[in-house]
Image (cartoon, rainbow, N blue to C red; front, side):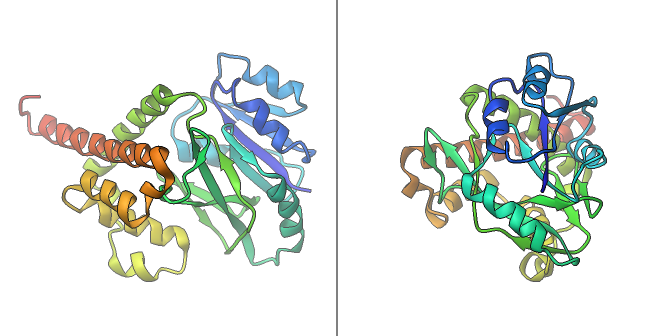
Length: 275
């Protein structure tokens, strides 16, 4: 069997559906950031174990969660607005049981949905490392964290579904407003561009090393918000996803714009210029 870890903060709306999708596991853990709604009550009602920790950073929270006393050597990590599809629920136990010792994680294709439409073309990063061998992974980066894997990473074929807008557009915007502040601070500190290596961006063996280098290079490019919108719309083909695809590409471009203007504001404050 495989354990399940779900990280939560005030997830009474989405948690029941997530728990139902992993009801096949006999070891479900909720790692909660001091929710004030019915999250813990709902989790315990589904037979899950609830652990609470005050949130500090995304990487630290996930690293702390991976220290829980899981019953099984493999753990599936989810957010409350994600759902393990029936196909994935069948594939995960088989993959974990058959994995050779050198394999320490598996990537899973995540399908993001907006207004009931799978953003097949608009989604920028479809693969996430979510099935982990306990004791063989470590999270880095305080925001939009990366997972470092001690060993090889395999890939599953069945998808994971993500209801990114389940709480409404206002919630998505508020959340990404927080994310953009953290990203701007990383950019101002120099951490966001430290790994800007074209060699790693193109040839690094590890998927996440390539992604980190690509993101660092992207941060050095001028007119990032416009470039991101054009890339998503016409290179990735977000326009083929219809109105939801166009909306998503525009929201992602807006998010990039927020990072840039907040970064410039930080620099102006440091230089003691008018804000």
